[in-house]
Length: 76
Image (cartoon, rainbow, N blue to C red; front, side, top):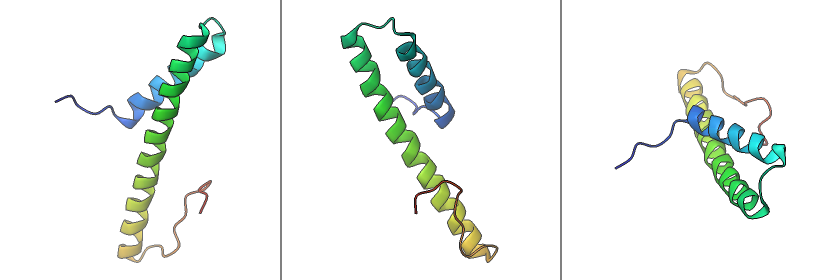
């Protein structure tokens, strides 16, 4: 069984893909594959961020430190 990539590794991979696509030197079929891979990485990273936000909110709420925790830029 392979170990899941860390959030930081996934962000780095996403940045690498973006650089490749921005270079303009990628054939169309390869660019589509990169784009598809980038969208999957973005979804995974977004889910991890939302999960982290929920955990932090739960911790702060249970602790009584903060009742209406909201991360700046969140869409809620």
